Length: 102
Image (cartoon, rainbow, N blue to C red; front, side, top):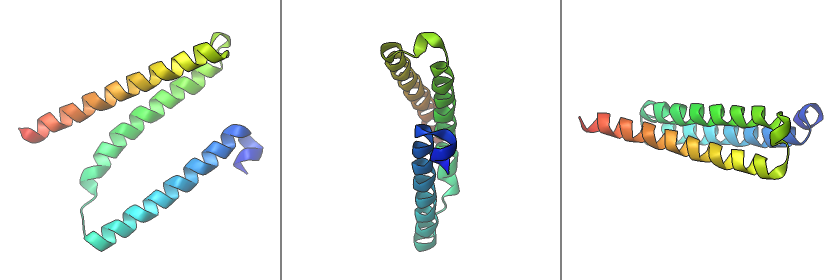
């Protein structure tokens, strides 16, 4: 259904949904087996997930611009977006590590 509605992007979305559901199943199973409190990790994943979603939204939005529809500018925007996402993630990680040590 995703492929029919979204084309090639739909195939990737379907794979993402399948991987996410499988990952969540494994996390719930791990929690049941180890009795580990996973809520302390949810905050970290939420921060990085929000950063990734924001960058993905910007990249998808940039693809509609005519100047970025050619391969080289598209690759440059993708590389810049990855760099920005990594930098924001590193900054968030360092700030949370700094708060944990205080």
